[in-house]
Image (cartoon, rainbow, N blue to C red; front, side, top):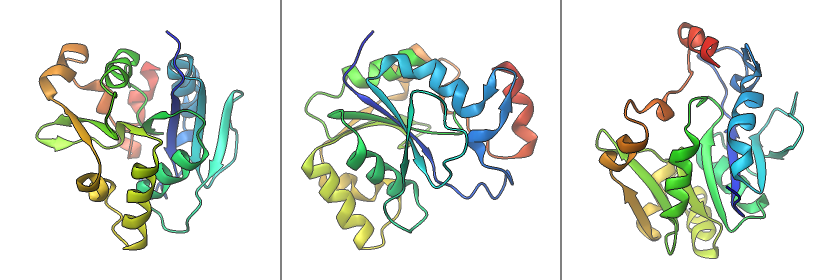
Length: 195
C-alpha cells in the first residue's frame, strides 16, 4: 500500500530511565530504529527521525533536528511537521517497536478533514501514535501552545479538528494493544528479543 503520508518517529527524549538513546537499542534484527523503519517505512513516502542524536540513522530515514530547545514530544511533532513533505503525518515514538502497520492504515483512512486523528485507549488519548495534518491551522496551534509553555502534547487539541478512534476500533486490529507498548526501562529490554 502506497501513501503520500510521512512517518515521523520521535527520538528527542533524554532516555533517563533507559540510560541510553532508545532508538539505538540493539535487537536481534538491528537497532530499534532500523527495525521500526523496516516494518513501517514501506507504508509512507518518507520516514523522518526527529530528535537531537544523529548517530546511526538507517538508510532511507531522514534526520530532523528539534527546532526548539525545550525537551517535549510536542517540540518533536512540531519539528517533524515543519520538515515533512507529506500533507498527512503519522507520529510514533522511537520506543514503540510493536506498532502494527494495519493500525496505521486505519488511522490514515480516518484522517480526511481532521487535523488530528488519535486513538483513545483506557479512556486516554494516545497522542504519540496518531495522525497529524501538516496544515497551517495545526502548525500554528502547536506554535501557540509552545510559546505559552504548554508542552503537553494534547494542549492544542481544543484549537483544531480532532477525530477520536475508539478503543473498540483499535482492538479489532490490535486486540492486545501491543502497538502501544513502550520500551522505557532496562527491565523491558527482553521484549526486544521478539524483533
